[in-house]
Image (tube, rainbow, N blue to C red; front, side, top):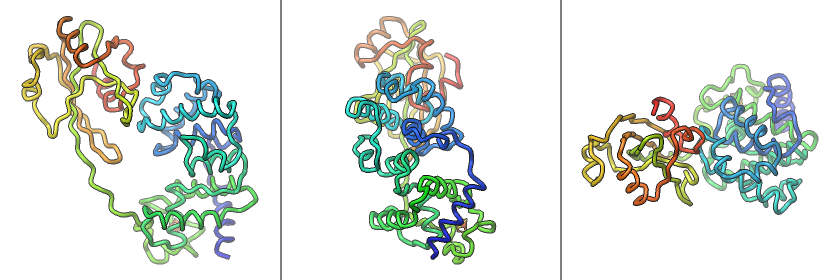
Length: 351
Ligand code: SF4
């Protein structure tokens, strides 16, 4: 019976409190899929402009598939986790070449797409086709572990399976899409990680975490590993209106993005130390220093310092050749896809 009450109260709460979001107004799998990929690890307010920008520049899956990777990455700039953009592009190409541009119309069919995992397949299958398949994201983990009192480590496969089965047992046959939207919205807006609104909650009478005072410890997660510090020193090598940049290679989280000449060190080092290894550059070429900038990723903290050098053509060409770099005109840097920490530096300083 608790299941029935849970479902009824959840839908009632949702219809009263839901946000109006554009991807909830459609059953077309293309914009639904776009929104799901953009919103992974991204807040709604931050993701919304990207959602509209992608639909404007690539109105159909054919437009996205036919775009260059550089154009896709360029539009993605600022969202981070660039592997999402690369997978988005590859999946669009797969949908066009293998499915004539038509999305598979079932959960199982959607899972055959390369960049689509169980969460995204469930979201598209239920929102576009009303298939009775439950979505399980971080919000759903939080709500279910709290309401039903699941005190197991959610990083364990056994716990993930337990929660997936519970979620599937709760989803109704009628309007499964609304139920899925409702539970995710409830986790995002009401049963939040740090400040759940228990006093005004429709589940306060049945919620195990609330009655035990355990809201803040659920869901249980094994302690995350400490983040690794990395120290990047970028040399901006410039001659006239052009600078040198290099594209990051395959199997790299920044694959396809462009960066200045990178010198990674194990600790913070001075420019004097950095220049000890250089036969061509000296302090007399230095025009400016910027940073350090800090950028936090899921497993790493990046510290980036930037040194801008104006060098004669002969040195510029020698560095370009030796390190296989490309010339980029200053006026094209904004459009060139690059990591966020480089964008941060470029925004703060005029070159
Ligand atoms: S009572 Fe508190 S912890 Fe339980 S579902 Fe409601 S908001 Fe979440």
